[in-house]
Structures are given as C-alpha cells and as structure tokens.
Image (cartoon, helix red, strand yellow):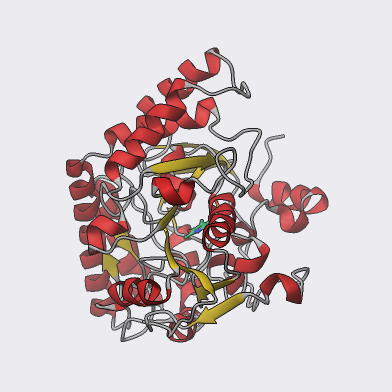
Length: 419
Ligand SMILES: *Cc1c(COP(=O)(O)O)cnc(C)c1O
C-alpha cells in the first residue's frame, strides 16, 4: 500500500522525535499533518499522495535555482562518480573558496564546514581567539543556528515553539552572551569579542535593518575593537552577488554562509581577512575541523549554483519577489485584510498587521496574532506550500515563473476572503 502523509507521520512519530528532523517541519505552530515529500522539480514539490504544491519553502533557501536543477544534478552526478568523500583536499574546494572571496569584498579566506550552525559556532570561537575576549552580542530574534551560546532569543523554530532559548543549555554557556534589541545600536565596551547580526533579519519573519543600524554597529565595534560578524546564512549569495556588505555598503570583519552555497547539499562556510583567519588551525591556535568539510558533492553543487547566480539572475529573483509582493498585497487589500510584506531585494516576508515590525517584540505580536495558521492552511489546501511557521521568510526561486506567481496570487485572493 502506498503510504499517505498521515500514515508516514504516524510511523515517523514512533521513531523520530516529533516525526521530523528539524522542529519547524512539524507543523507545531500551524497544526495539522506535514506533507511528506516524494520528489521536487523547479518551483514544485510533490507529496507522497501525488499532490503538487508551488513551493515557497525551497529548503528554507538553499534551492535558489529551484528544485532538481539540471546543472546541479549533473555536477553532483559527476562528482559522485569520482567518490563521495576523501579526507584530502580537492580542486573544487579551492575553486569555491576563490569564487566566494572574489564575490565578497574584504573577505580574503574562508573555511568550509557542513552547516550554518557549524559556521556560526566556529566563527564565534575564531572571534574570541582573535580578540582574546569572551563576550558576544547577539540580537533578539536573530537566529544563528543551534549552538548553545547563540540560542538565547533565537528566531525561527525557537520562536515558533515559544521558547526563550533551550533546556539543556547551561548558565555558563550563555553567561558571555549579551542579547540586544534588533535595530538599536548597543553601547559596547572592551570586553566584547564580537557582535553577531543578521544584516537582514530573516528568522523573525523578514525585518530589514533601519538606516544607520549596520553603519552604527560598524562604528561602535571599531570604537571598542570588537569584531563585527554578518551571519549571511540566508542573505549570502541571495541578496546580490556580493551579499550584504555590497548591498548595504557596510563591511563586517567576519562572515558566515550556508544555505545557498551548498546548492542544496550540506555546506556552510565562514570567512574573514587573512589576518583574522590566520588564528585558525593549522595556522593558529583556534581549533576547528570536520570529517566531511569541503565535501566533494557539496562543493560541486555549490559551484554549479554560484556559476548561475549572475547579476541578471538576481534581477530576475528580485522581479519575481516584487511581483509576488505586489500581487499578494493587492489581494489582501481587496479582501480588507491587514498585511505588510517587507522586502529587501529578493528577500520577502509577510505579517498580518498594519505596520512593518522592526524588532523581535513587534515581530512576535505580528506573528502570533492567529492569522498565519489559517492563511497557511488555506494556501496549502490550494496547492501552495509556505513555511509552516510565521517566523520564516518566503523563498521564491529562479524557477518560479510568472505563471506560478500569478497562480499563487489567485490562491491568496481566495484565501484572503476567508480570513
Ligand atoms: C539557517 C540559519 C542558520 C543555521 O544554518 P543550518 O544550516 O540550519 O545549521 C544560521 N544563521 C542563519 C541566519 C540562518 O538562517
């Protein structure tokens, strides 16, 4: 008998906590049964019951070209035929590091890892090692993966579960973490090693930096000799060719990447100047390592993705996001539904309120007002898959044509009338 979403969810809950391998997938904050994916292609995912969805989850960002892009598949197949992991360096690791450093002005060296979490965790250790200081600053509602010291006031799934942080994290682990409100430049002192920020916050819905925020952080870090870290796991190679530094004209000291750079395979990276990266083993005393780091399948997929992410690709992505934004806002307005859709280039969010949130407190009020679950299920019923949580961004891909965007807008118009 072919499995159904229901039967698979029942079985999965027996052997996998909550039935999922990452909490946001569990539909906990929207209710109902997750769809189990059988395959995906371009802008679509297909569940095990054969239902097709226009997909705005897109793996939460990595599938920027759309699912199963032929160039990515060819690169992975070609790499796989030559072996899947060696424990020795490869040419593609050099090539992707060169490509990243070429795109990101000021970043001179990178180290490849296997996830965004690992990138942020390692970058924090590097920053502490490089400055000889202990304290770190993060912003409420920014998510930097699930490493202990960065989980406090995390966005994304942490926020969806209504958690302040996580059980199992010791007071010691967060004693050196200072949480500040997003979009306000905190006053620092010389105990601060690094200030971590999502240059566009995309894990509390989408919250853009107010003018002067990133510039202010840069100046305040310089004043006390702290490093500025841009967590570009979502924004990197999605916002534009060079990422947030190029977009906003503010250069951090340390960068974290993930999602897009793996082309849909597990990969992350962190980078900095040659001097800062010189603190990393084997050059320096900050240890960091990984059996599967720089994995040949992941570097092949990542290189294939980056090679297609040209300036015109970013223009297309922004045009797609803009069409979706304008169409959806029109549909909400016609139905008398209060909604805002913050957009920064191709990055797009949705809140059911009148004014755009600017920090975690206002984002929480907007995300938890009960509208999103109803909208989500209305859309899912009509074959449009959004993230099952109000704290996530929308991820239109390069494979979303105007036909899919307009079909989505038509579905929004129907659902909006029911809200
Ligand atoms: C997704 C995300 C991470 C964590 O990356 P994983 O690959 O899920 O470990 C870190 N920072 C930001 C900004 C993210 O969006």
